Length: 109
Image (cartoon, rainbow, N blue to C red; front, top):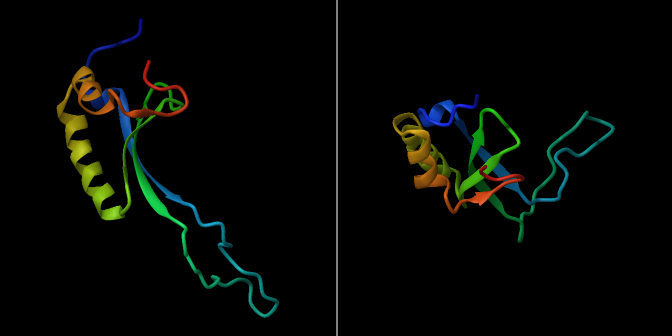
């Protein structure tokens, strides 16, 4: 029998994902040294952060809760979301944060 009621932290975990659209090399090879970081010119390349909820019983179910341009804003929201995850029931958390959120591969069932 599948359990459908309880605390939100018994059903979901949170993660912060950094997305970097740079296509450059992470390391540059040289004969005299093993590796070195290349000079980076970001130009139009973008970095952003996704705060996501992941189902504990099915890690393929990922729901993007919010997207941020800076790491500090994403981390602050993640801490706020962690407090909500601990203090809310499953249905309260899902209706407050996940309804209308952008679902990943399979979304909320």
